[in-house]
Amino acid sequence: YYTINKKYTEAINKFKKALQVDFALLEAHYNLASVYMLRKEYNMALPHFKEVVIAKPDDYETYYLMGLCCTYQDTTIAAESFFYESLRLKPDYIPAAIILSKLLIKNNDCANAKNILLYALKNDTSIPEVHYLLGIIYKIQKKYLRAMKHLRETLLIDKNNTEAYNLLG
Image 1: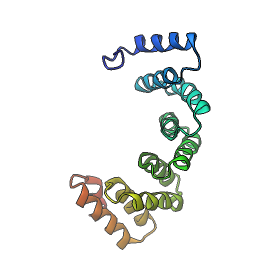
Image 2 (image 1 turned 180 degrees about the vertical axis):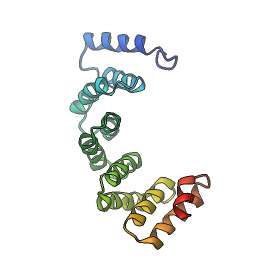
Image 3 (image 1 turned 90 degrees about the vertical axis):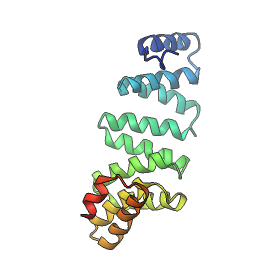
């Protein structure tokens, strides 16, 4: 109710009260962290997500959310670690693969980004962003035919992708 109506302060207070009664309530930690993320208070969200993964170490989605928090705080090394853990737990988790690949490309680690994206592509060939990122990587590596193939594939799936048009240009 509170989060739907954007009454974040009230939601935070309710979740904090719930945690005072029972600190082990994972749902309260998760929901509190999610509200903090909505408010862009990533440093406040991380400790509550941490409580979730301590209790549920196989929760790949929470590791992904922790990676997002770190990405928004420009703590790239921590973000990469959380995204890698998310992918270790669920290798075909596309959101983690895409964001981690973007970070790796930004840090000139195209080889690892390419491997992650090629694995994602094996599981689902219909995601334009995977093709787009592979197009970028192949262009960086001066493998222009492969770059063009993936950029064309991007445009077949997403005709409105102006960045792919520009790279083909």
